[in-house]
Image (tube, rainbow, N blue to C red):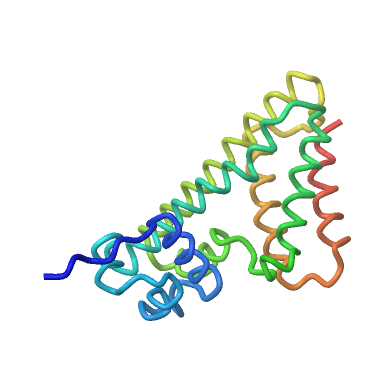
Length: 194
């Protein structure tokens, strides 16, 4: 009996994520995943489970990568307004980049698609939003301690506002023809800081 071909699971997961991100859950077939990852159907099932389980694993992977490469900006030292400016600039740069082909955010797209009808996926999307809210919350607490927060709203409410701004910018970037539209929206969000 032949041994199954071994493969780099992280690389395969990243490739599966790309397919799901480009096509969405519903329009992605197992054959699409096989072709894009280069992993045989049986090996995909043996390693990741069915398409639904693979998608959940991709959501978890995206959540981890987003924390490491985008949200970590909010933990950097510096004046809070400058830090938030760097965060929004990177978000806008990534959203409008040719590399990302204006795909939007994987989690935001999922929330607007299957996240509506699949409770298990909805929980993953909500967990991602709560991670981001917590990151913004801690950022705002530090800004408040530095006397840089100027709002009648509490830090939790403002964190939720920043989460919605972040999601909104990703959605706008899918069709925006003018970068200034996104920058203007980010500027309003940054007005909560001195």
